Image (cartoon, rainbow, N blue to C red; front, side):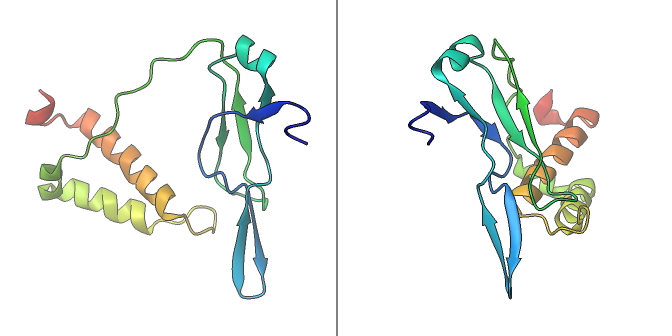
Length: 133
């Protein structure tokens, strides 16, 4: 159907396993929900993208479609400085991010890493180091 309608997936962020269910003793995940666009729409809104959010109440991840004509300036990529491991605050941030649960669901490793990156970035903005000067 996707080929017949001449549409393709928008770029996205987040976990694309948009549905999760239980089958006897194991969890099943699948990419059921998609953000699609045709060539004309992509030409009009070239910077658009989808974002799949965390599972909350439903077995489907909510999706946000960001409709944009121009590409926003992207933030600088995250680089982890190994010297930060010596700081007790960083150890605590990683411990908290790694052990926390959201809305009763168990976060994936990718989600835990993303949360650590986000929290360490906030800490680095609030606590400049010599490397940042």
